[in-house]
Length: 141
Length: 141
DNA sequence: GTTGACTCTGTAGTGGCTCCAGGGGCCATG
DNA sequence: CATGGCCCCTGGAGCCACTACAGAGTCAAC
Image (cartoon, rainbow over all chains, first blue to last red; front, side, top):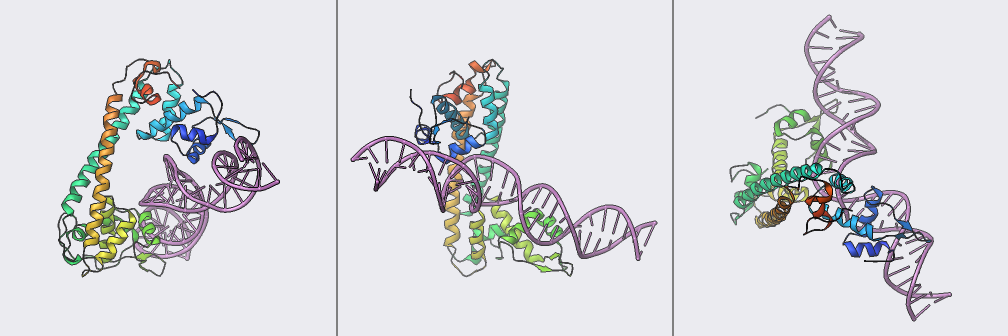
């Protein structure tokens, strides 16, 4: 527990979030504007750490800023039902699973492409498969 | 084989690439500027289709514009060795594999998060795990 | 009072498009 | 010849989630 308010650098160190990013989050309304020192420095308190960690964790999990905004709104009302959160996780999970499937197909194609002929471009499987998908060895562009 | 030159709309239909995207590719030097009609319309020929399909296929495989630029340069010199292309595919494959690994971890975390308590936010596992990673059921923000 | 680390604001850049406004070209029909 | 409808033109702004600057001010230690 920190008792004294701290500057943006301190918040950055405590959360691992870039200083510029913290200011950006404030600008887009994700972080409430903190009090200021006489000289105009931002003075954060513990609840800012909590909130920023929440945001950070959401980002790490791949949620969009808007989704996190919604989750934060939910989190602020402990008595509201959490179907909304459940929905968002399911939707996001779907998306991630789709992305994995896409990338897996991609990976397989790339694996087929590698082990190039080891010769010149004219016979190159890589260039060939970019020129005409599905078949190797085609004319170059 | 098309014998007559065609407008940008025709190129778009033949390649599935958005008209705006085609103009964008021209602007950034990925597509050579075509001839123009008297009225100023772009007049494309078959080699434009080939090149655009190459670009499109590269993008579908997840290559960056810059990588595709390099691959195009390679493809234009059929006698050059294709190590460069091989290298690029291997690098990209690495990246894709890393991305899959990351997303798989993510997926597992999201799977743990779902099947929410079905109650209110205060007891919600989702909100809890965003608040304090690793453990469920924490105070909200 | 001077140093040096920290912070401030505002703006621009990243990638790879996508969209829009406001205008002009082209062709078929009346 | 005029009209309508579709296509195309340019230039610029907007998207996401930051990140990187420039140029100035603040603060604490020595």
